[in-house]
Length: 230
Image 1: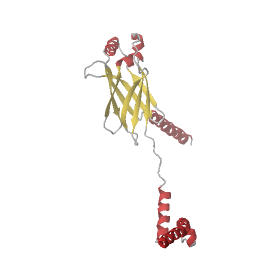
Image 2: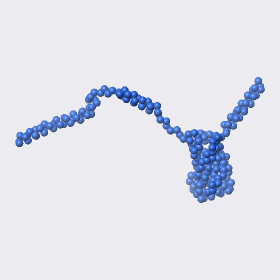
Image 3: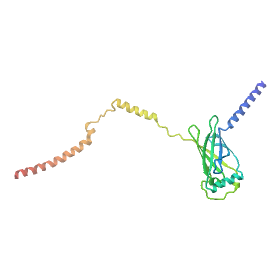
Image 4: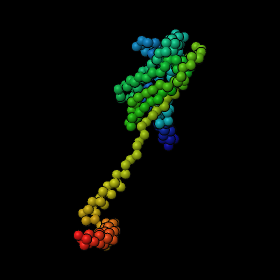
């Protein structure tokens, strides 16, 4: 009996370890590449491990900038050039997706490498776009020391499309069915009297006849006098 209990405990422990490993594994990985000059040569900035897009649970592992990198970034800022990036989405059993984004180099410098990524998803949670947002959007020309540009401090936010309002199809179909049944049955019968149906036409006619009746005796009297004189 004790051997059975011991075996059960070992199996449970193994299952628990596998469960924890599976839980801790990233849903997918995002490789971050950047360009520190005007050339088309990129270097690896780091990696972002995405654990949960609903809670923006991401772990960053980014390389610090060396003095040469810092000098190049500051040169881009002085030239009012762009800091460019390639974002490589790596998902299991799927082809890599490469997206590009950029920001003003002076914004990156004055933000002291504080930035965030907005990642845009489709209805199936596939990545369809990304944008880089430095914390400082405007460049004021303030002095930033090399020590402030040693390491990136980043966040990542995932934006999924919102579902629009669903039309009330059932109510519309029921309304169409009621209208169809009413047409087939000839519609509800109108039991109003003749006067109730057409009073708006009869009243103006009665007023017209009354006015005409008052005017006719005067016209007839004037016509007879003229005839007698002749």
